[in-house]
Image (cartoon, rainbow, N blue to C red; front, side, top):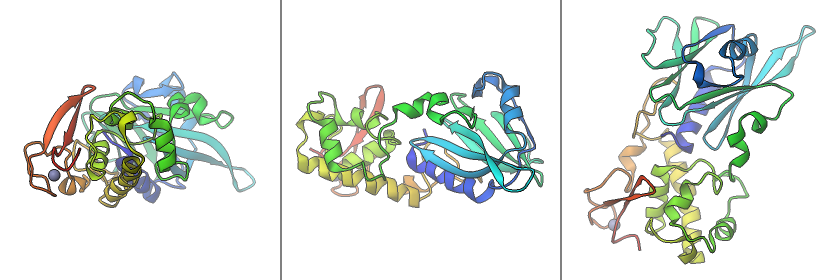
Length: 286
Ligand SMILES: [Zn+2]
């Protein structure tokens, strides 16, 4: 599942190829990919003649700022295009001549025979059009529930300590909760817990402030390292040009069950927590 570094990699790629070109049409191949408006034809009609001024990211959501040209020159705000990749969604920038992928759900047509394709095998991915007179979180309701962005000033060791104290649940599960901090999923939760030497099953309430400080720093460190590697190697993540990331080659514990810890040589273990796999080193993490 794409997490913050993967979505950020897609955002940067989209900003390089899709901006300031007028969308002249499109095709919805799977109606339920369009979460709003409720009719796929309305979605396409709204996007037609819009251009994308900038792609933003909030948690794992992508938000394209839409504009339309004004008759007298200049441009006016035309709302937002929202995208959530969920489990297997991919946004690919391609030539219209490229054969259609089996799991292609939505196509948006741009000039010069280019198109943006939303390919999504598992079909959990979603797209929204948000009208200019509505705030995005009113239509894309998941946005309203998101916690702080990890790279924002609000995300500090003090914030984490305040939110984790007296919580009787494992820290691994807390990190996956998007209302605590936005954008972290299974991969980077495991990686951050390794770097901060905390076992995934440790209860939040049992963490010392020193541990929380280490965890805070480790979250920023692993997210930054993965963004620099252009996202993960794991799963079927692809950037807009269809290329996989490089983070898998440098992962500490994620997906390394049975392999040697890169720090101490101990065998990496895996356990099930809340239906997800947690990977850790029994020696380095206490
Ligand atoms: Zn180790």
